[in-house]
Image (cartoon, rainbow over all chains, first blue to last red; front, top):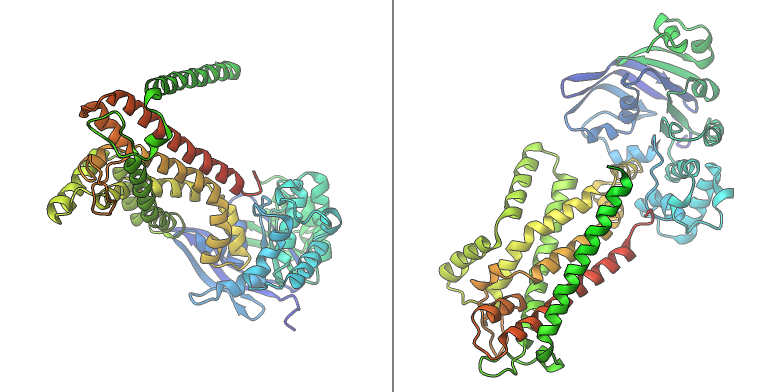
Length: 254
Length: 275
């Protein structure tokens, strides 16, 4: 039961930086093991939403969160949440590949080592499995001692995915993971997202509408901090219920 | 102006600096040559003969700069960590930075007066190695903090985010990502701070004195190379005092050069894997 990808329930979530509300009364459910694409114009609150799920939003001074977020049975919002436990459950991949200035191996082993795993055989198995899952193993086997920075941008991003997977999360947050990559690397990451589906609940923030259409099961459209529409991707893209969604999808809204 | 023009200006500037430094060094070596011998490095200074050396001054320089660094580096680094990694409250940051800039721009001779007032007059310490160490520590402190703050700020925030997102606590993130990534810049900056401290003289004249004792001790007078150099050129009546001053200058320059060379080498070796 513990390994099953959890549902995510959001109830009346509002988030403010100082007195500026960037997310307003958002309620939604993401079914377990599915890929949810979050789309919307810049500044609509989608990155903030992502950072609420692993509470990385706490790093911003003066942030207020109201409402409830649950990942499986785990309460995300509150003063006494164990952030380490939460972040082991909910992994994240960032917009720009951000490998540590270490070797490929040490990058992937970083998370497990944080948890106190020192046994070298166990670490090697974990690293190999994570790299395989991130479809990077074939490209880096035998080069695990090389600096992560010697990899290409697309490989670095898959390394970051492997690094996140090595902690065995149940949820994977992806914040525009391909916006800094070329089309070929983008295609590889999209393929990878499709293979991760089922095992992980994936939330993918993207500016690339085709990408949302290609990889996601559900799509959520945000505007000015409000959740305008959430539904199966096919429906949202072919028969949107809201005019605003249609305008955004057809490029009539900026 | 075009980029190539600026490049030319930079090349001419560097050449000019190198030539000027070469002339200065050459002049010092030429002047100091009659006094230079291995024995000069360990003999005690003499007012009456031209056979004086700089042994005690060399020892004092090394011990005092070493002790002052040993006190200030851990404390300064800790303050910088508090400022960059934990100083979330804006009021704290403001006060901290203002104090840092004030201390940085304080003339060292004023620091010398302060330490003189408190320790020599107030606590009745002798002009000594110990008082000199305190004075050097006060001078060095803001520089160590500054270098450490710069090194920590040089670590991309994306490293911290990545570590936190993997379930790292703030402390483990600092220990396993931030400090290793900052180490190279830290060593190189601290090397410069130490080298600077070796040439410090104003703060020591009031506090460590312009004498040495035959018997080294924390409460014995603690003239350093830089102070000795100043003394030889202004007060000394020893024969060939100018040549001795030049030779002392050469030794001091070599020492500073050695510190800079070694720390830069170490910094290069410690560079994180992305550079």
